[in-house]
Image 1: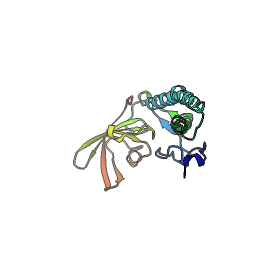
Image 2: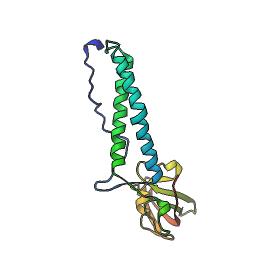
Image 3: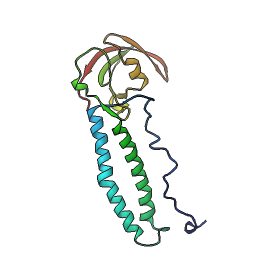
Length: 186
């Protein structure tokens, strides 16, 4: 069918808000480190104050050119605007419910809580270091794990010297907590 006979919908796509983003457990707070909060707020401000106004200007210009059915600037501009608006809504909700916890301000303790940087050793003696961060800050490649991840949940409230059991896709894994420290997480 020719596109001229198809009505373009201004309704948002059927996709959920940021399907790839992990959901918060029901009734829990959105814990974040100051760095994670700052990055999320910077992204929100960039989208809201810079990118969205440029898109609206481009769409207005494209709409003033007449026929919108074959106007690529208009069609793709509207699509991108929906994506930006969806991300802005997501960031707004996450920032609104954020509970910022600064690990550098926490008193020294050997017990694992949110914001701790924990060094663990597996049964073969191989050491790994993890920083326990908010769900929107997690990056396993850089050693930052979400506080709701299986590893973080197993480590929570344990102390230096404790051995904890973690259920992984490969099976149960025993790790010993070698060191717990609280520092700013980059």
